[in-house]
Length: 212
Image 1 (cartoon, one colour):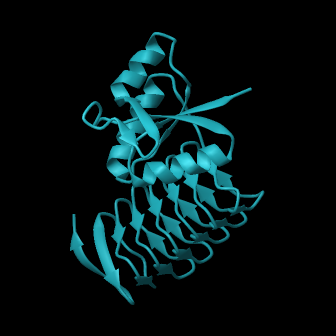
Image 2 (cartoon, rainbow, N blue to C red):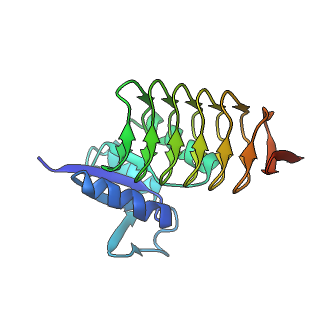
């Protein structure tokens, strides 16, 4: 039986998501709101907009009820996921074959786990997250819905990251630290103290540089 997956978002991130999906045996179809101005992403055709996909589903002729939102922006990813859920779509969860996932971890729908990532025992990953290339999520960590853990990030045991937060490439977070909702941790930062919600922090050690 052919497995079909609709991917919303035709960008560089979408390319990698499609690559993972195909390695897992899916046939993919792209949808992007830039259509019809943008009709292809590499060799993949873009079939229409997100609204077009929803319209097909309402006519019961959609190519797939399984969908993955491949949009890096946390806010837009959240909006699209909620819209698609309201219209009866099932959120797929993709895990690259080289990722190492504990049997005791929990991964919510709509999340993508990229190549070389490690998710250890009793970690809890929320809805619509991105666990990017070679990220390490240690035991008992909690990642809130719609957050992005960037490539080569290391979260030590018991770290909590809130909803719609972004931990930048190569950052390290000390054990038992809490990072709030809607935070942006700049690339290469070392987080050694708790971070409140709605801030941007950067540095080694990381300090809050602005609130938003």
